[in-house]
Image (cartoon, rainbow, N blue to C red; front, side, top):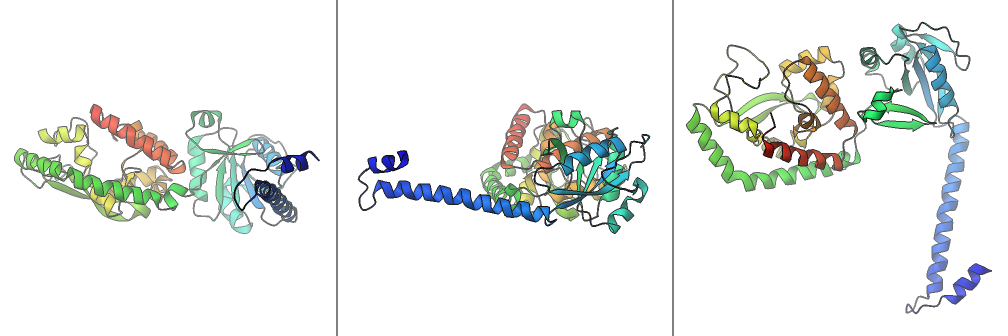
Length: 376
């Protein structure tokens, strides 16, 4: 009754369309959307109860943690998860029986167990969150057509170094890379191309000036090229303003550059301090070999060694390498293995959280770092 009085009382002159018709249409449209959503949800719930669209999960971990995670997944409101069973971790010492699902075997047999069961998700739940153990597990599972999730420790949740999703109140880290809409839509590539192309046009007089200084400062070419591994591990030639003497690695072989490296020329020290030597990589960005923002590309020689030390190192190849990136503004250049380990954490964080906002944040931070001369 109140609604009818409200509709009759409103009579604003909108030409051929009466305001009452607009309000009635709005109410009809809103009610239809709510009804359709309810019907779709009801059908989804019905299909899930019948087993259609459910995730088949295997939990790897200690009995106590496995039992806790099993309860959480089975109690999921939409019944989205079906726990096939558990796999006993190597460091399991407890004998807490998980009566909810069967035990499928031990960690050593994980690949065989995955191949024999219709599994879509592997959840790693350990009492002792030993990172080496987790890395070994992920490396073993890697390549199987499954999604990997990890029950994180408190530090990883609080620090924000890992992106988590909530399932029935249980935080889980999604290990498998899913391309962000910012990247998959092509907007990131369009922004890279437009920004780099305009920058090359604007900075071309400056490039000529820098080239003249390099030529006068030492013998050798102005532009230095070197093979790097880029998107999907494909090799390409990276371009830089030469900041070292010619044939710098002739005697030493491939080595990382140190802060007081004697091979760096006097002009090169200034170029490297303000990252001017990196500017020719704008050409690589225009050619589609690199992005403005991303993990730094590495040489094949070092990549081969780092892949042996860090099993997940190849995940960096899932995005285009960048002129600058999250790890570059958060950590100095690589000097030893621990630097690589720390920078990998930042690279993985960037890959998992890739977005326009993060790219803009890194770009602005890079400008601040460059202007302050603290880039190296």
